[in-house]
Image (cartoon, rainbow, N blue to C red; front, side):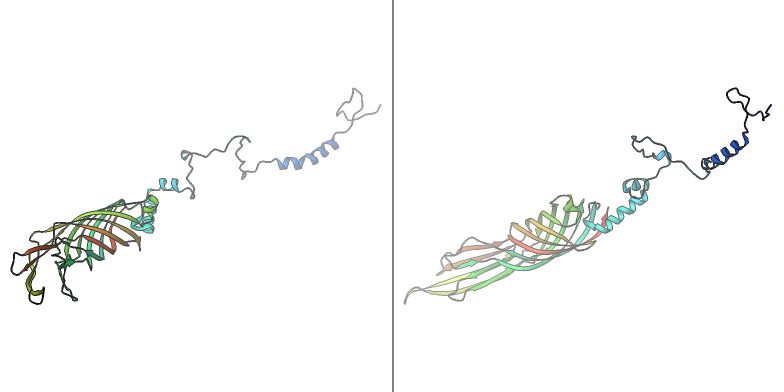
Length: 324
C-alpha cells in the first residue's frame, strides 16, 4: 500500500498531495498587495462628497476666516482696517469725496464788476449816462455740508459808480463818481449733479444771497457851470447847470444770484469761475442836476446807482477743516 502524508482528501480518494509548495507560492504572490494596503500615518484622506452635491462653505463658527480677496468680510472683521481704509480713501479723494460730511474753507476772489445808474431826465439831451466796469476783489469764509450745501459770508470790494455825461459841443464832459466800494454778502449755495459728479470734487453750484453796502452820507463833489446859448445874432440865453453828488445817509442793500463752476486743484485747494447778477435795494450814490435858463425856475434831474449790474471773476479756495 502507497503511503502519503494525510494533508487533504480529494473526492473521497485515498490520494494525498503536499500543500507546502502551494502555501509558499501564495505568500510570494500576495505579499506586494498586502504591502500596498498598509495604512500611512501621514496621509489624510479627502472629504468624501457625492458627485451631485454642491460644495458647502464652512461657517465662521467652524473656524473659517475670510480670505484676503473678500474686502467686505475683511472690513467687517477688522474695524481698525475699516477706519484706515476710509482715511486712505479720504486722502486720495480729498474734500470732494462723498466721505467728507463737513468742511470749512477760506477763499480769495478777483472780479470784474459792471454797474449802471438810472437817470430820470435827460434835460432835452443835455445830460446822459453810461455803464461802467471796474476791477474788484474780496475774501470769504464758509462751510460745505455733505458736498451738497454751502453757506458763506464774504467781504467784497466792488465800487458803485455814477457816470454823468454833459453835452458840450464836440467835447462832452464826463463826470464819474464812486462810493467806498465796500459790501458784505451772505450767500447760500446748492450743488447740482449726481453722486458721481459730487465724488470727484468738480461741479456746478447755484447761489443766492443778500448784502449790505455801507454809506456815510458824504458829499463827493459839487460843481456849477455857466454858459450862453446863441439863438440868433441878437438873442442869447444864459444857462446855469449845477451838479451835486453825495452818498446815501443810510446803508443800502443788494440781492444776488449766481453760478459757480468748481475745479479741484489738490487735496485742500479748489478754483472756481463765477458769474453773478446784482439788483440794488435802495441807492448808494445820488447825483442831482439842476438846469435853468435865464434864471427861470430850474429843471431837475437825478442819477442814482445802488449797484445794479453783473460780476464775473475767479475764486481760489482753501479747505482747512475736514470732518469725514
